[in-house]
Image (cartoon, rainbow, N blue to C red; front, top):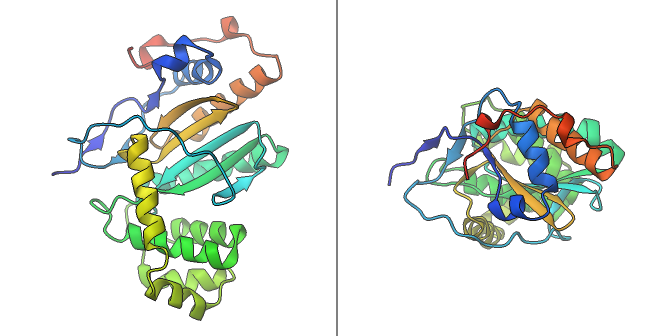
Amino acid sequence: MEPSNSQTNSVTIPIAIVAGFAMIALAIYITSGRSSSPAPTTTAPSEQTVASGQLRPVDDSDYILGNPNAQIIMVEYSDYDCPFCKQFHDTMHQIMDEYGVTGRVAWVYRQFPIGQLHPNSPKISEAAYCVGDLGGNNAFWTFSNLVFDERDFDVPTNVTKLPEYAEIAGVNREDYVSCMNDRRMQPKVEAAIAEGFDLGIRGTPYTVLQVGNDSATLTGAESYETIKGIIENLLDQLDGNFDPEAAEVNTSAVPAQ
């Protein structure tokens, strides 16, 4: 099977959400209407049929940046060697620098390495899990940031540097090497891939935006301006300050139902 790169509109609005309580869908609808162009994604083979699984609730096994009890939670499924995941990683750090400090937005990072496109990405995910298991949440994020920051946009990660990144993150190198040699985290990576695939993920980055029991998906490396607009619209709704009639909507930018 040949991999394909999706160039379709990257904002997905589930019909069920639009028909029901449309808090997030409305925010995405209005903000995406102002988006200049769709963002490309890295995708798995296009012949597969998308499943409709349920998002696993955020729990203590997750790696979270920000307040775990935040009103807005962004659960990202990502591939360390995906070029657009690197781009979106930078965007999300901008978002967290602005909104994470208020305690109202949290970012959850989950693994979805696409080995068909990036052969080393499952190994990097194993490394990240080893670092997180040995060093905790902060070590995981430091390691992840190094992986993304130390490579160019379309250049694969230099996996020979992973032990160095683990040490910088505060993990003992021998413990890290032992974890990797034992393939201790391989089952966890395989479970993460199965989880994402069951959810219907076929490309990265793939982000589930949650507010309470309401959710919607963002597929692709949306820009900082788009994500910021969605969050601002959601916060306005949460604070009772949102006026949808005052918002300008370009309906041509919204996916047809």
